[in-house]
Image (cartoon, rainbow, N blue to C red; front, side, top):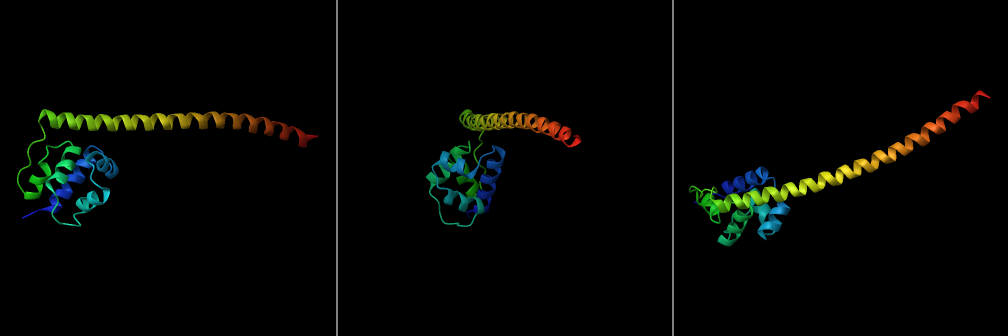
Length: 137
């Protein structure tokens, strides 16, 4: 008997572990986001090709037949081989590169805001000082 809920749990758990978005998984596996969504929520339990499950398994850093084994209810092959570790490591490194780029972009934005606020504070404080002096006269 096929266990599509187990496949959904395996995919979702691995995506959270890496972390990886559905769009990233779609790009890496070359499987449509619609198909991934069906698998993630176990909404369509129609038969999927071995190639589809293998592509998703590979994109998640698992051996090709990992999700087929999960679906069949058998023990999945260990992802501990050097190829599995290399794939997983490259996914993690790629994600770290993305995070690093985003942090750099945010730091630049904060710096621009700080510079803008610094100029605004100087303009405001000099304007307030002259306002305080003028009503006294």
